[in-house]
Length: 138
View 1 (tube, rainbow, N blue to C red):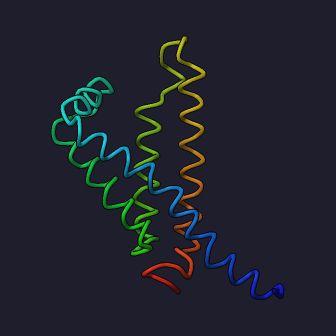
View 2: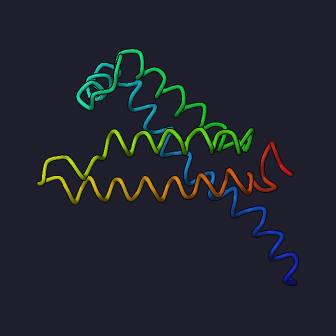
């Protein structure tokens, strides 16, 4: 294998791998929320989210559609931007380590930092696109 074909294979497989590693986070979360809509809405209410009974459906929709868009590589840049914005809001609303229970400080800080990493991966997809193994292939 020459360097060129190795680089070409990496350019095809690594963006696909990135999409396939990020997407389940959203898809599994949405499916769990669908299984327990009332519980998820109650959780959103505890976080202070307005109209939690309606917002839960928006959350589920964004997560399912965004995950599927990433998996198939369709409108990947748009999906990545929307999901990055979604994760920013989730981090700021759901993982307020700076103002929460001191006993939960480290846990919430870790979740917040993981969300920052997820945002970083999504921003890379937003800027560089889905790669060659995608419906949107360049």
